[in-house]
Length: 603
Image (cartoon, rainbow, N blue to C red; front, side, top):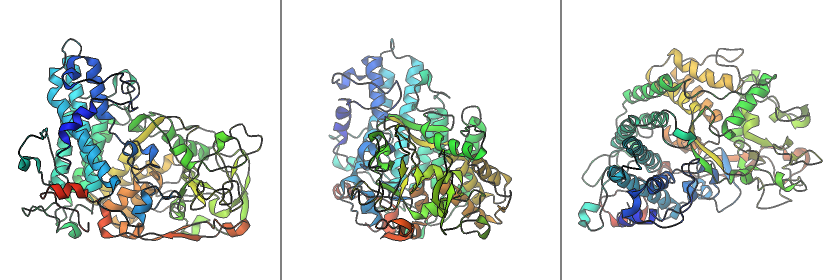
């Protein structure tokens, strides 16, 4: 870890540069630089320092620039998508040409440990805040927020790097003996146990809802939800009895990962998810629902707007008022139309995710009863379109989430920008968003990601966790710990019902028989429900299936063709995945200066 930096991290943080992390409370732009002694003299400065700790929360709306605002490469580094732009770090990862010396690899490590260090300083000193301006209740709540944030940053570290050093309450001092500054990694289970303990501790002093509509602040629901996330990670195959990690040990021989599977971990994870549901649903959170005379349109609007309606009842945690590159990255080029309807369109969805969505009747496209076809064209009216369009059969009668997630050639665009003619996205070679128009601002696959595109590119909430995640966490953990339990089907079908597709056991959709079949059904549901929400990358790894999903041929449409020839499955690239790629490497500089810090396997 960057132990020589820690004594300066706090001082640097006190410059408090402008950022937008949380509505109202965290929209504070300081006009001066304060000293360590000044932090707790006033409520204003105390609030600013806590806001600075919050600023480490990742803004996943700016993934074009990996590490900017702690944005990850997660969407384009998964089998869901690809960036045209070579500078995006996901392209290094999908070719397995990334390195433990890369700045991106060190960026997350440094940033989250800085946040942890500052949170610890805050926790140790908040009780000394001016009692006239900062009441005892405020102190307790602020301390709980900082404790929860520290746990959250550890959670981000462990799901990226695996087992990490735990600093705990320490404030590492550069003047301490060098041996005291060199910390070893703690076993993975111990890391998760620490995170869970800290979340439980912070829960006691947190409110159920943020005061004064200061959305984005930590609440009881947030910490209970991340407890579900952390325990699911602990139970998953990558960390629970993974023989490939058995050799990763500290220099004293301490194993960082248990080589023996413990099925009881799934029960603990299931209990955490159910406890969240019982306490918070529906009083504080519920699945987001839109109404419309057409149930199919209602389902489409529900699944689309849950992402773009700030702080609706399904949102558990998000980074508020965040800068937004997503709009440009996912809006096709649309040459010849008003500028408000034009974008770069460089984040392309893969054919793999296109094929993953179900049909309107709830069946996968591989099912003979699904009515799926790739033969010819028909007139079809998509749920967002005021009229029928000539549409390739592959895209006809798909489930509502397909139309939320995918812009295909011939799609009516979401923002018509007062155009005198309909803005239709055309990705064929000569089309308004095809390769003849640009070699850079163009889809790499013949599709663009459509999900989470709002009405404009203004700053808005960057969603991190919603209720659907917890429902599917619960179903997965319960299927592994108590296969056949009625709640498994109940919570999967709640997700499907909101999505406008028949549940398992309805119509032609048979109930999966047995634990393995249900596991497959749950994984497919997570894949489409949480598509493009930075979940798939980590799911494929914690399930230990990435060597299959991430080392594969990526297909799309034929970008060099017009007419019917465009609509042919075409090889885009062949990705490379090595077993080392399951985890980020520990930054090389940290390993070089700390012999106790062992490297991840393969790096």
